[in-house]
Each structure stands twice: as C-alpha cells, then as structure tokens.
Image (cartoon, rainbow, N blue to C red):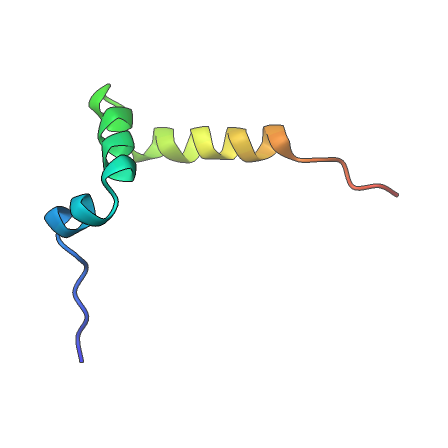
Length: 52
C-alpha cells in the first residue's frame, strides 16, 4: 500500500500555527540551507558540556 503525504490544505487545517511560522520564515528569502544552519546554531548554543 502506497502512502501519500498530506496536502498543504490538510496540514494547514491540522497545524495552522506551524504552517504560518514556516511561511513567515521562508517568506524573507531563506532557503532550506538557512533552516539547517539556524537549527544547528540553536542546538549547539544550547548544548551543555559533558562532565568528565
């Protein structure tokens, strides 16, 4: 059985705040590489040192 991803309309109905945030993020001309970089920065900035 082949599963298909949900349509953007279905996602917008289920996750309106998330979809709006995604649209706002990419509306400034950002691309997927920017998303990767921003996410990596957030993860690295929040990382705690591992105690010895």
